[in-house]
Image 1 (cartoon, rainbow, N blue to C red):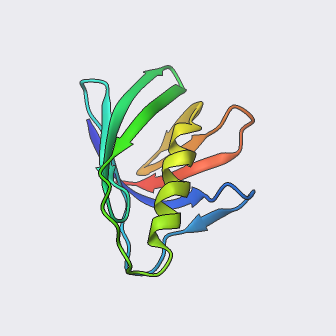
Image 2: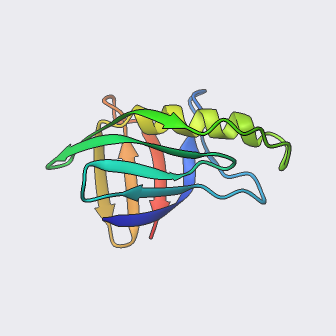
Length: 112
């Protein structure tokens, strides 16, 4: 039941990067087992399961609009959605959520 603002995501090339200037990504975990948000251009949703510090997300569906601005936003969106679906564990420390894959690599960092 918490809404998060994504600050960083794994770009799939062994790098955790910040968002493009002028873009915003949101991440909302519903109490109904659904995750949703805005991925920079489109909106997305799907199921999630959590138990202890374990987290499984997806598969995710998203709307199919095309955005030209800011430059690179469509690539950012694909990389973020892939990173989110790589989720294996999560940790909440204060107002910060960190999602990692099964190897412990950071996938998504968000704040509330």
